[in-house]
Image (cartoon, rainbow, N blue to C red; front, side):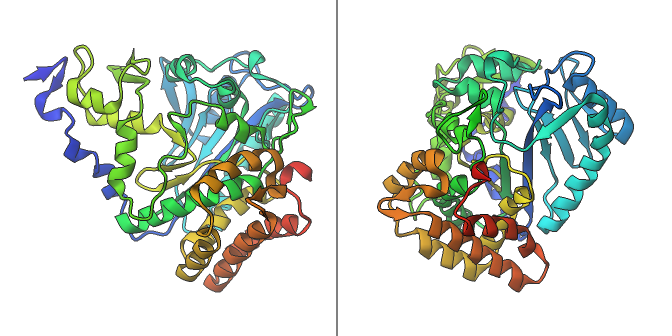
Length: 419
């Protein structure tokens, strides 16, 4: 039997939903990084468009030829490049995202980024483009940024609600970190901790106060944009209870409205008419779920910390000046040292879920000058950075050096937006 081209043996069953997460259980302790930057004109500081003689599409085309990358296409439009396990992709507003194969150390991540940036440099100079290390476009606003020709992005733009969803899609750039887990218990413990730590990290790396050429009054306007985008799929994925498991995360995904599915490279727009659980139980028109639908739905879910076959920690503004490497170093030191992890957990576990949720709003506005309850967070941020530093130093691989820019900045009581 088949369901609109889906063989009955391919139809997704509830028992399969655990697969991606169970397959993520491994003994590796690698660190991954996704690094978004905003391409702007050296002369005008305006965001570079996708098309045109000196647009981002042509830049990708030239770089692919010069450094032997393969095209990533969508309806024959270049939307990114790939080279073995590394990719360069474009976010909706032409934000330039470098996704690296996970590495054993932050030093290895930096080495690969430096290698790619050095190869890009002559082409960026020829095109008179800077890749800006900011969390939001400081000059060009979304009304003057066209979405790139990727069908998925246009469907998302038509669906995502919230007064700043267009800002989030077209203007913002961030840095995401991926960490490994060894078991369901290890995964849930790290997932819970990463959620609690997230607003503190957002504050430490807040770097988007200027937007449209004016001071917004927020140290991280990017974080504010996420706070005002589709809260059915953004924010916290769960209430991160101590006894939660993979099934709690899966149940959250099952109850999330669907945006679209893909059949034979054709987008079927669901417009949030049903949750994934309803799709599993009853199908949609003549369509029934397959594993690719679940993977797509999981990737269209945008919480601050996302569970995949690794833990993806998402809500950091793009930063530069060495601080870009402080982000993966911070998590690598805390997450992979038993003693450091326990110390950091003890530091943060005293706060309630409601205090953590409230801090998300305070961190967007005041960054390291925010308070959680009546407690200033600057001291907590310093403690987290130092816990990670000494864990990495004890390891002896040299990654602690990448935390020095963060530690020095926090000693001055500042965030990147204030430097």
